[in-house]
Image (cartoon, rainbow, N blue to C red; front, side, top):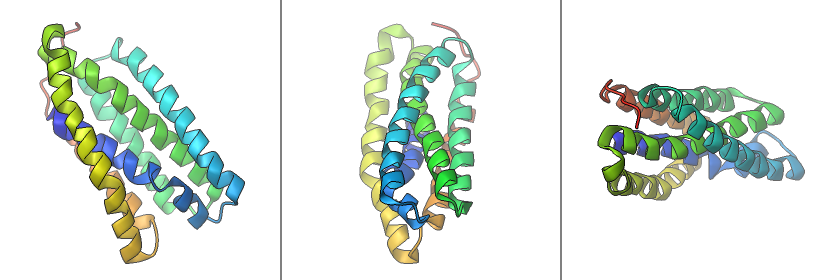
Length: 179
C-alpha cells in the first residue's frame, strides 16, 4: 500500500508539474507568469518538504499520508476549473507543496511501519514507485491533452489519481507507533 500511495501521490503532482508552463499558457498567462509558475512550484515543493518533515514528527503518519494527496486533489480540481492564470499559478504552487510534502513523508512512513533498521531497505523499494510515476504520469497527461486539446481532463484525472493515494493510505495499519 505504501508503494501504491507513494506512486499515485507523486504521479498526481507530476501530471501537473510537468505541464505547468503549458497549463498556465492555456490559461492565457504571459511568458513571465508562465515561467514564474516553475519558480512557485519549486518554492511550494521546498516548503512542503520542510513542513511535512515537521508534521511527520507531530502527527500520525497515516493521517498525514491521507491528507497530503487530499490537498493535491483540491488544488488539481481548482486548477482544472480555473479560467484565471493567477488562480492557476496559486493552485500549481499548492500542487508543488503537496508533491514535496509527499516525497518527504514517505521515508518516515517506512520507518514507522517497518522500524528504523529496515527503513532504508523498504524505502528503496517504495521509491521505485517514483520512477514509475516519473515515466508514466507526464506522458499520460500529455496524451490526454493531445486527445482533448485541453488540460481539464488531464487535471481531473490527476485529482482522481491523488484520491487513489489517499485511499491506499487509509488502508494502512492504524498502529502508528512513533520511532
